[in-house]
Image (cartoon, rainbow, N blue to C red; front, side):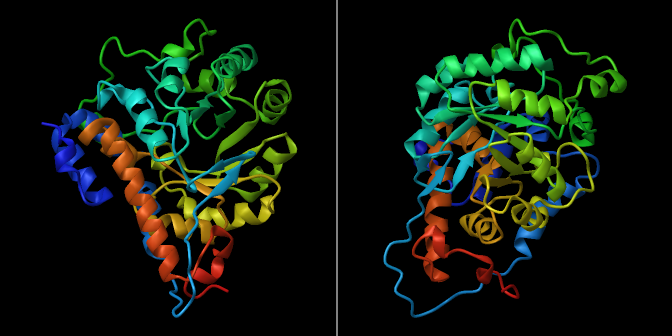
Length: 354
């Protein structure tokens, strides 16, 4: 039984418990599980927990302004809703509820390529659902999809590059999870098929650096590159025309044993050197985690699983409340570390760093 608005949870961890209690075991395994033995999945959170914040006292903190500008657009907060596939698994209103909840809290949403909601319908449900994630579908298919997003009023694209093949997910196998019949990624309709019959076929069809450069030049919208951990890859992505970098290990869902996103972030941020926005996802569970990521070089973060917990627990209201909790926690953390604006945030907020 799903929680109603009168039963809203108090923390993101509480939302997780409510969501897990109400979801079928297979769906919960899909949402919360990771690749392999889930070392990277756990590491994303543990590495954030291992970064103590350094408080500053007796400071005149007069506003705690969380506004940030990304790709020329100002946002109320430095966190976005990450692209999450198959949201209809957890709530019948799916991406529309997420878009409505995100927009109500002034948070930009990135619609998944594997959404079950048409591009225009999701955007109509929430004006801030205006970035679109895509996977490589060959040059023709990818460009067609880019134009579909532009025609539907989207403002940017986010190409995921770190998952040319899916990682093994034992938790899903143990729970016998399969996608229900009839669940369709509607925005991919009519695109050329991909070769999913073998590992070799998938890798042969995966994009290369020249493909990224071609897309950045040909696409009608700026292209951010998601799934970067190596500083050299970040520099090469910018050279290819990438409009932004997302430091991500795919939420621990592809290759187990990778560094946590927060561990890779400082090196990538140094390589980018402010030329394009740097986002990070992976392990954000509280407002203080947002502050940690900003302190180590991110311009903003993306939040995935906690938003889905809110969606599962209470639909659009749950999504909005999860994001409101993050905003309030971030502002409190800023106040207690002496930061009036995000411009005050830097590595000095992390104990032991200067």
